[in-house]
Amino acid sequence: MRRLVDQGALQESGQTRSRVYRVAPGSEWQRTYVIKAGLAEDLVWAQDIRPALGQLPANVLLIWQHGFTEMFNNAIDHSEGTRIRVEIRANAATTEMIVSDDGVGIFRKIQHQLGLLDERHAILELSKGKLTTDPARHSGEGIFFSSRMFDSFDIISGGVSFSHTAEEGTDWIRDNAVSATGTTVWMRLGNRTSRTTKKVFDEFVSGDDYDFSRTVVPVVLAQYAPDPLISRSQAKRVLSRIDLFRVVVFDFSGVESIGQAFADEIFRVFARSHPGIELEFVHANVSVRNMIERALSAR
Image (cartoon, rainbow, N blue to C red):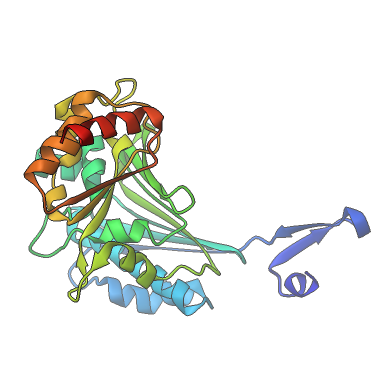
């Protein structure tokens, strides 16, 4: 503890048994970039971001490089904005980064270009992976993998926010009190995490070609409170584009109940017509599990 105090990582107050240690205030860095020809995420990383992050373990730096370059490039190529602002806040324990633009908003753009129901539907599709509005230049994998590399990963845009935390291991949608302009991505990572980019990729890819073949679908994102997941149309929304994967895991965290038609559409109708896709489910309570098992037995 004395060494950490001497290094400036901790602050101490009080005496003897009343002594209290707190993480010392860290550094802050920020810069705004004009979106124009020649702006490149790899150059910004090498010239500005990497030095601003300071001395971090190699695995942590690689995660930051992946997350920053993906989000910064998304803002360059997709935001239709004029500026990108990057903020970094760091202390001895954690580092946070905010990448924000003044563009049209990621969820609104996905909704309009793909003809989706609303911004919440855009988040549901984005959470599955392999979603892009520009397939010629992007694979649609950047946000999916980046969100799973950080301790916390949030996107705030328009009337909704997308959130993924490593601790909970699932995705959430939150309604914004005030509609947010542009897109803001907030990433947080412990400075001594053992997580690596390879571990994250290995969880969802397979084969010699390192194919992105496995996805996790957070079913709760399809639920519009207070209405439960009952209908086949709701199920079809959850099933949209999952034929792009070989293994699909339906995560029922936060889902209290589902209807017979909803379960039947996924675990009997879709399963029978797509025998090459392996369907799994996790975090289902007793009520949800009973409905799923009823559909499986009918199959």
